Image (cartoon, rainbow, N blue to C red; front, top):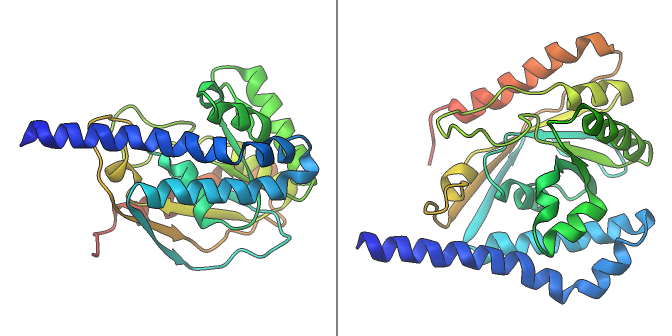
Length: 247
């Protein structure tokens, strides 16, 4: 029975990568056009949300979202969430309807097919390089000035220790939010580690719970206040993730 279960999970995991690639190939002409210029980014974002929905529902997941506050159209936000799975990218796209730009690790740009469009539309950062981090910060500033929102997973990557509920946050997202005086939107992803972790022989279809918390205003804050803001957001997400589970 254990062998059958392991084989089923393996096939299900392979199916995930098929779902990642096939919609991109089908939408290829549109994606090439929509990534040819930043003015087409809203159209690309629609394609990205369709792609994310195909993966999530094609894998047998369903989303349950609870929102304390709703995002407004034509307003920029700093979206921050915990990060435990590759599925977090798709889940963020599925939950947030307003166009935003990811700041993500440079390694994802090496994934075949997906990586090509990831490099053309996201802000890539090598977290081991100070020069790369500064370049990513400057690019994020430019995209914010265009009226986009930005999404950052402030842990700076997925913790190798699976027992860690929430790793320490980096300052970048909060520094950007204060500098541009935009609200910070804390978002908690409850189930992505359980449903689709980076351990290849684990996971299962099922519910993905998302909590969008009250936004934190940054108007009037100074750059020196980024760490208290960071710690406040960490506390909000950590308390949500560690509260008793209600089915």
